[in-house]
Image (cartoon, rainbow, N blue to C red; front, top):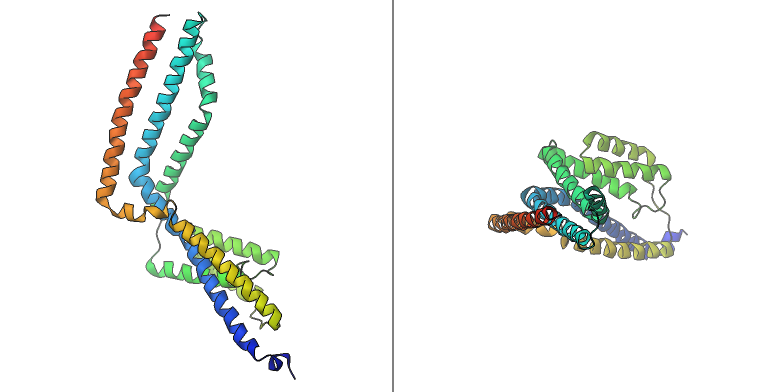
Length: 267
């Protein structure tokens, strides 16, 4: 008598595990779709519409902080009757504001990447659907959460598929799917009831984990800006606010420039 005939619930349990695997693979695909495509497109849209102005505001804020600090350092030299060596003061300011400058460079790089993304060639609807379908096949077959016993070679193949999906490389994705058919044959599992129960528990846990990740992504930047970016009135209001800050900060900076010139003119 076979093992399966002794345990008639095996088939039912196997179906439950298969259903959970399918649910998990769908969630993983949704998460990757959000992170690798939707969120990047949303962020690019936000960067182009809003972040260029936000960058200018932040840049002016840094300049104001820096010139105020410069005034403090110069005034201290004047009060102590010390020689003012402006290059040395500038070097000190460079060190003190290094983190701000790095932040500025990071922001401009993000904006440039967003502009580059907008200039990239786009797929037809059919090509997009094919890329998604192929990637789903890869996820079901090679994703480590669904297939913990894959080899190092299969793991690398999966990472290559992630890169191909992120970069919209349809040719590479097709090649990987062809390789999967050879590398990972369709073999019926002979797991026992205990192993299936363990697998079921692990799948339920992983589903909850991925779902939690999805929920966090949807309430975080940039995904949480979807509705804002659809609202042209809100966008224009934000632009007006930022342009107002730019005018205000330019006036502040001009004021501090005059203060600095006045102090240096007294030396």
